[in-house]
Length: 156
Image 1 (cartoon, rainbow, N blue to C red):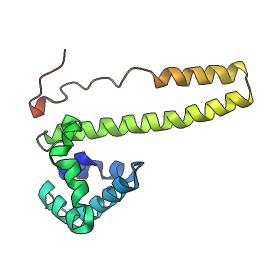
Image 2 (cartoon, rainbow, N blue to C red; image 1 turned 90 degrees about the vertical axis):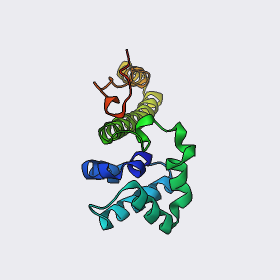
Image 3 (cartoon, rainbow, N blue to C red; image 1 turned 45 degrees about the vertical axis):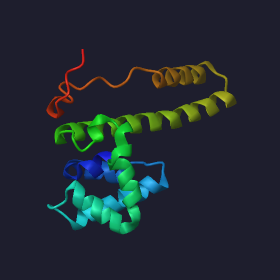
Image 4 (cartoon, rainbow, N blue to C red; image 1 turned 90 degrees about the horizontal axis):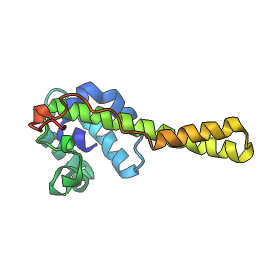
């Protein structure tokens, strides 16, 4: 949500993904829905300032400030307003992919654990072990040149 607040121009590329994202917080989900509504009414003229003002009028000023103001320093670098559009777009897509991957993985693990409790078979055990290994697996591969457009140095 913070990435879109600071880079609303990426909505043209990620509107479907953003609108269908599973957000676990009612507060942030409400902000996401309001953001989509504002974007629909400001097509072509939406920048971060226009979006923040429109969301402020809808009662989201404090939350917008939290995600785009000085308190937002804990966010991933690409979510900040100073990041290049292409880095914000790639960063958003990566975070969403990871969110979906691990959200689905958590559900599969819970299901596998229940199945194992009911049936201590070798097949159930191997499925559970495979899912546990995936849970602790390596992070997504780094994206070539990610961050260069924002002036970040390549990592070795």
